[in-house]
Image (tube, rainbow, N blue to C red; front, top):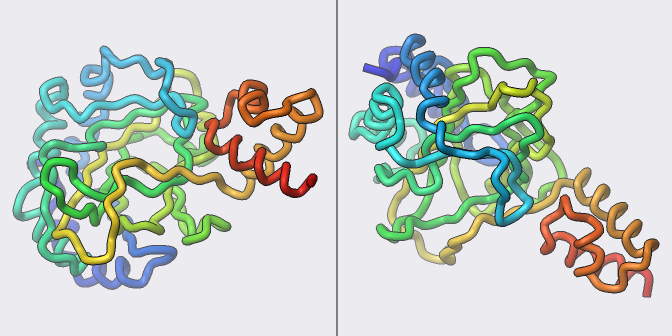
Length: 282
């Protein structure tokens, strides 16, 4: 047994109330979700499971940096596989239905987009909403469950999971990636979340987590979205505006030129900001 069943199953009424009332969208934190020794063994297994991954490998976009992971159960340690087996079990799915009121809930043994995640010093994950359907089952993504496995983590290193309001003007809730803490939240078109500030943990220390997503039947009125929708926070927009204005001052005449001069930003963000600056100047 890997999950601390006695601890969290006894709290379903409390967790249900917390989940229903939290803002900016429904969520709840569940501390000590795993048995302590199981959590420690799972954390220790990251080095083995991700030994062939290069965290510094170039990414196809710039909304995520210095993050790696795997959904492949075949490379994970037996303890990690056992955890995923239990959180995909019918018993745990019934627990989720009891807490969230969503029924039916379907687990995803394929771990599409989930699995083990590890982020290094300097890493960030921009605020976003996730893809909203399962590519093979055609079911609607409804819940994210993230379990953090960082036995030593200091607040000054950053890395808190941030939950933002619908227009991404303010962060309304945040959770440090505390050891053996799970955060469960409802996914929707406005469930903006991420950790957009680069980590300042020491070299060699990583922010580790297990991520699992759950699905339900497809509702009316929701369009399928296969891609993650990344957005910038107000602080990031201000920094991007400064970079675009600097590029223009140095002679950039197109957003492509500005993007080359501001390489830390995703070109799509530069294009929108370049157009906005041009409108104001005209």
